[in-house]
Amino acid sequence: MTLPKLPPAPEPPNSIEGPTLLVVTPVVPPSPSGQSVVLERLLTDPRGKVLYASQNPPPDEIGRSDFVRLRIAKFHGPRGLPRILRIAAAVVRTVLSMTIRVLELCLISHRCDVDVIVGCTAGPTELPGAWLCGLITRRPVIAYLFDDPVLQWPPGAQRSLASALERLWAPRVRAIVVPNEALAEMVAARTSRATVLVRNPLPNDLSPRLQVRSTMTKPLRLVYTGSIYGAQDDAFRVLQAALELLGGFAELHVYTANTQAELRAAGITSSFVICHPATDAKQSIALQRAADALYLPLSFHSKIPEVIRTAAPAKLGEYLASGRPILVHAPSDSYLSRFFRETGAGIVADTENPLLLADAIRHLASDDQEIIDLAARASDAAKLFDISSARRQFWALVQEVVQ
Image (cartoon, rainbow, N blue to C red; front, side, top):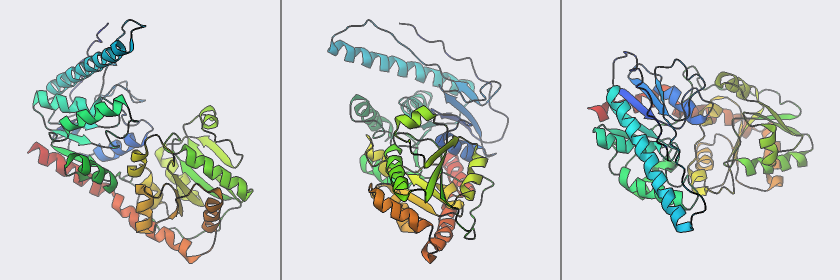
């Protein structure tokens, strides 16, 4: 069993006035993930200093003074043990890994004179490690929940461990931040803790617009930007069946970092689904605004349905601000379906029936006044995701915690 070396002491963050935050996260800006995008938009602000700590380095790791790379603790034991000993060994490995992680974070907090520790989901060690570091160093901790910290794990040992840890950290962190009302309700029901709602914000230079209805292209151009994984893949398969039924009336253009092999493995093989390489945030917004309509799916048969019910994709605000009609394809009890029904900002297809989904796509191309009004209601709803408001809410919370 080999213990990893601790990371070298990072350079203190720049000399901006304000509290210093240690953000413990599985992804660091500018990594191409929704969580990374949200952190970058929210924390790029002169009201404080930010130091990211993660075992997954960002693309521009070299030369960054605001990032410290955490080591991955690997422990190897003898093979061929009986089941009870394998379970015991797994518990020991978990405890040792967490001990190393907390020790690293404590050293970083001390060397960089950190004022507040922000522990993020969705990795297994970031949030519990941040809480333990705060407990040892007597620094306040904010739990930032991008996903449900317990139900994001499939039923089994990992969910049981996450639930036990939540009973320890939830009553003791200074504040809990959530991106939507559904997750706030779920967390409150389990922990009896009030939460702070900070929505995933729009980019700084993006304002909602009301786009004049333009002539639809033939075929109708649906657009999706982002990764495709277990949280959406079965919805994509229903959509491609609907596109086959429409026989060329519409196409879905996907801009994603997924490889062709990954998409084929997910069952996405239709000639009416055209895949393009991933683009940066600015290009994605331009593509969204040039679409005839935008596609926003969630899985109907996920292994973690509770997460689907509370999911709020980081691209939600961008889609609303695009000025284009939105087709929401998600279970009826999901936050997405609920949000769009309440705001009237898009068409909700909460079915796995390709025939009904095909009808919804045809409706998108109509000149119905209802469709024309979608953009106006979406533009109004996009104001909820204003970046200035999100920053004010978050940094006001930080100041309250510091004081």
